[in-house]
Picture 1: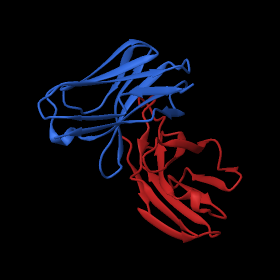
Picture 2 (picture 1 turned 120 degrees about the vertical axis):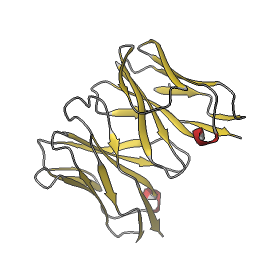
Picture 3 (picture 1 turned 180 degrees about the vertical axis):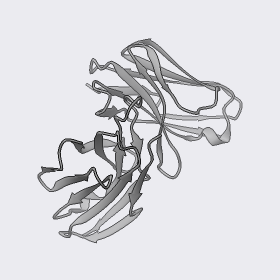
Length: 111
Length: 114
């Protein structure tokens, strides 16, 4: 039933590792996003895809690589994890490019 | 690009009082202004939004006002209840090439004391 679902919910990993977070939406939306929420709760967009095409790519280290196999999925792969990557990563989707529905978040802790 | 400033960063009220959170934005082309509520450990959830062709919108105990000339918008919560305690975020989007890009304010931690 969950509209925007992402896995895993919690991820603890060591510096230098590579990890992926998966996201799927069953709302039929054309646009999907990745947002990062840091320890101060600040929410900032990282990427946006519209019908599998990258439309927003904020200033994000190239260790972060999004992939959209189809318009219902948007995965985030992170290479060579650093301590500063620890945050909550929210996947989201939208049908009109404005009203955004967030997933439950993935809590990433890099140790 | 768009810049959204939100005040106050923390707000403490007694149950039954009103709470007001204010935001300003920089891009005059922005035309969509949502408010999100985030409870501890949960996802941000849309509670109300307003588009630039409307000056005010109300939904039960919450209302949002927009002043396009001054480029600011506010969230008003009346008759606050303890379950209103959360972090509230304003956001703005829609200007020019910023399709689908919501720029968020810094958030306001609202605490409603019983």
